[in-house]
Length: 408
Image 1 (cartoon, rainbow, N blue to C red):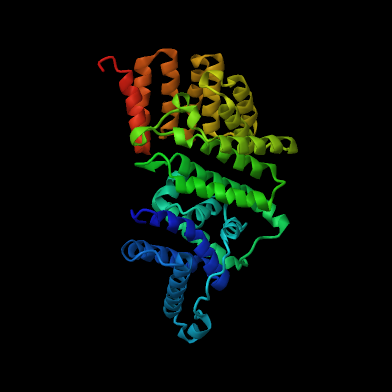
Image 2 (cartoon, rainbow, N blue to C red):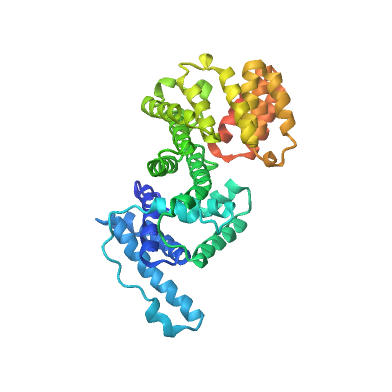
């Protein structure tokens, strides 16, 4: 949005709250989202030069409401229904209430009239604050395809006539899986950005944690919600040690564990310890349990890889994700030797979901390096570097390759 210090973070945090307030008052979800985007753009242009207003949320709501009026009137004109303008016109926005409608937006975007892919895409756009290019990368589809998908999703919300508010408890359960998936994707984009100059985007990961806390308070007895919150906290606890000077990537095995956040680890361990006995055990709980094993090890040498391997074997029975399979291969290599892990990685080469991505060659490079095949590892590191759009990951992979170059 803007490079002005603090303004971009403020706008990202306010965006879903403003959209929620505008939709709550006036409806028209699809047009309201466009109006809010224009209000955010106006703020990004004006605030760095003129200063942030005393009530930034109220400013954005007022501008968005006025723009919504213009958009609705323009739509009526195109449909030659000028005689209904008076009925469509919006009253001046009252002072905004101190209400955060973000959680309602989460469930609204998970409406059953949308396909699962559209639910996630729309929520990433309206609530997570991700741009369409980022969402397209998450879905591995062209940007134009994602633009059309989001547009259709907004139109479906409009046509469904769904009221703005939390769904009843029985319907809430049906939408919960897609809401959790969305929050997980937002967190991952913040913790390991898929593109650009920065490895982490703290604003996104912090927002995902905030929203998941809200969700956990809403459904405190849901073990998977608790598991996802625990997973985020246990993963984010390592963030201070993940980057070195200049934002360079530091792998977990080389991180200074004294820089990990002990409070986040303690909270995450407590959450997953309480959630696991509730059953049935879901994928977020298992991933959180794996993260806890990593975080509780005082050094990389003392990591309980046998327990991690066992947890991944359980996880693979309920989640056929190729990323889970890759991580399982690493755990197997740490327990049984690099060749055992490479055998598993080779079986994944035919998985179309990994085709063209950097993860498979990166894992293969790591295991080849452990096996002592430096030439093979160097070639795989270079292949992985060519496939990632993240500049810190590119630099890290090139550096790993250079370290193995006998001419270097």
